[in-house]
Length: 333
Image 1 (cartoon, rainbow, N blue to C red):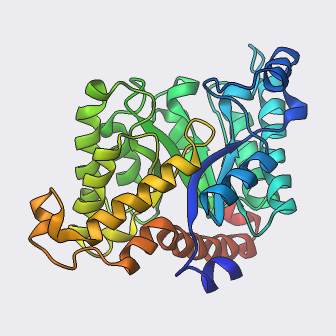
Image 2: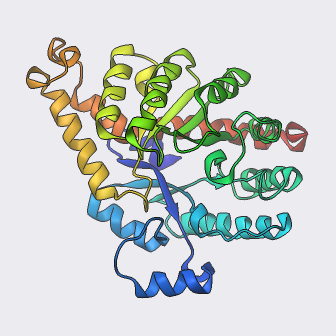
Image 3: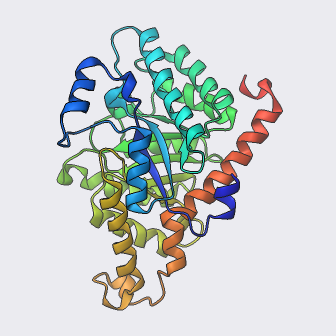
């Protein structure tokens, strides 16, 4: 909290990165990880790998959560729960080893782990591990974003003082914009994070409708925060323009991310910096909304999107979480 609060004006924060414990990989995964130098989709990266990439990309801090591609499930909910707890534990331990670089975030799965296990895990992640943000991935774990088990888990997270986060993309039928709207409207006074802002792994043409719907939905539901990651760059620029034009508080609601290891930090943050340079130099921009509004984007505004927005959001969230924890177990019932 101290670093986020005192350095918010200059921190660059990747709001979406996945860390994996190499020692917890299955034998086939470990063999590929150790022997294959080429990139492959979902290639795991350790905390140390992320630090090296952050240094290369000039990223100060990163939000990290587990990588679902490397957490081995089977048909046993208790086995899946143990595997997911280990993955969350590595995230916690990595943040303890690198407290000035990582902001740890959790992951629950009411589908593979079962609702009761997910509720218990949520409480462990928040009250024992101290995670402010806990994510659900309806797309990869195959359940609707607005299903009854999700509402039960999110009710519990909100009562605990934590911030629920969702994979929100066009790469599956499980995260439609209407589902995110129902989540946002159920918790109007509480923030909700939607990672990818409609992107994810979908083909560009397939994703187009959700890109458009997500942009408008965030304006209509001011408790939604979006992470710009795994989304086409042209749409991310349009998102930034729309939210800057919308002014306060909406210009505070977008965070930059890479989705590492599915995206490279160096590529994504190099791209973000280039986009902001072109937006600040608005007179030559191709978008008339920017070209005809001198000063719409400033270096200070760019710094907010690159890290300040998330830093201030997290400080406010940690304060709320501490208040909830100090209130005691009754808050969680």
